[in-house]
Image (cartoon, rainbow, N blue to C red; front, side, top):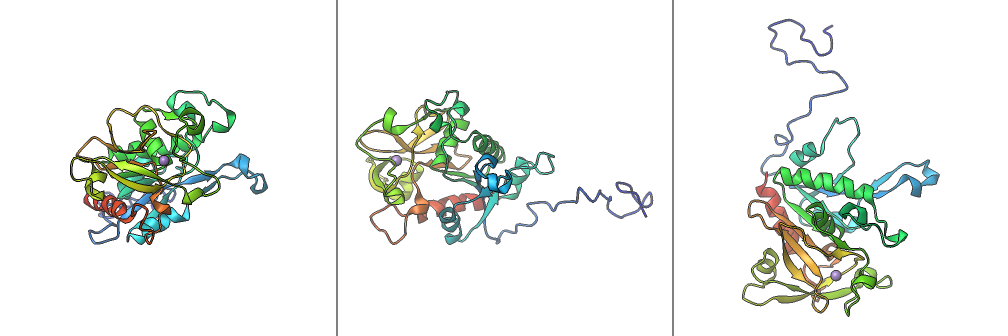
Length: 291
Ligand code: MN
């Protein structure tokens, strides 16, 4: 019986034996053939231990179903990206190598401390735990050259990770004629967005001339971009209050895009609202190219 970590005989052609607690992992690239479905890593939402006393303080990691279905309905496989174990057995770089792209989805506010501010009110504290988790993922996928799509909170995390800031509370800091969140109508709250020409979204949604194209989107957000991070380009704004509603990374070598609206809430049968399907198709094409 050979000892763990040693070879049975010197000169043996057997592969090195590794300990049972560190099984060899297949090369992530080798298990995804060219014709396999694209694998989209979806960043998780959290229900933290302090919110789950009945469950003895265990953290719950979950995804929103509408987001998972948007990915799946486009023919790709959504994979929940969990938090990483502290023993370092798998890293964010491993995840970026093994997945074809990253989708950052909506949820709790970004903690103002993540971008160097104190929360103006205790209820605007946000989720600093999730900020750290998502920024680590984002940096790993950027380093790996993999596509990133940020939705709602996702565009905010993208901006903050690259050095930008946010409005902590739109109703008190940027009061305007457009309602960006409505508790009653929730996912059926809509407002217009102007998609700029000469942008990725412009090419996708018909702003191909000199003028912006005005569309309608689902809007459920409490915060928004304040100072745009270096390296990001504005793709769309909300008319009248001028809020940034979409950005892309100004790097032709890497596909990174964020939108402040919720395409996953759009029903493809609703012809009054911007069709969510072209955006997912564009993201998945970039994911496929990045393999
Ligand atoms: Mn909005």
